[in-house]
Length: 67
Image (spheres, rainbow, N blue to C red):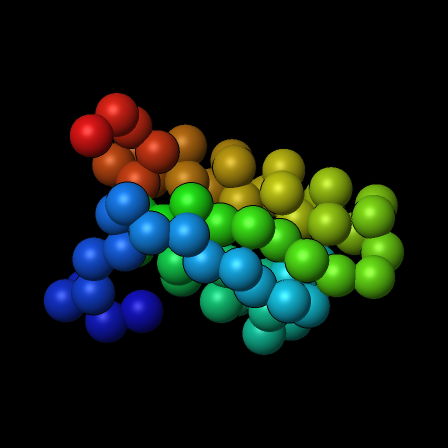
């Protein structure tokens, strides 16, 4: 995402978020401050994606902290 975009206080619904472009898109929204809803066909893939995104956002810090 372009650093000029600020998605704090926004919700992003990302389909196909378990892998590939969908997962990359979800990560970009999360890094830009959005609350991200992951959607896809395979529950286990989405759980794994959620764990990866949570770890990545927590490691980066600002996107996950209180306002």
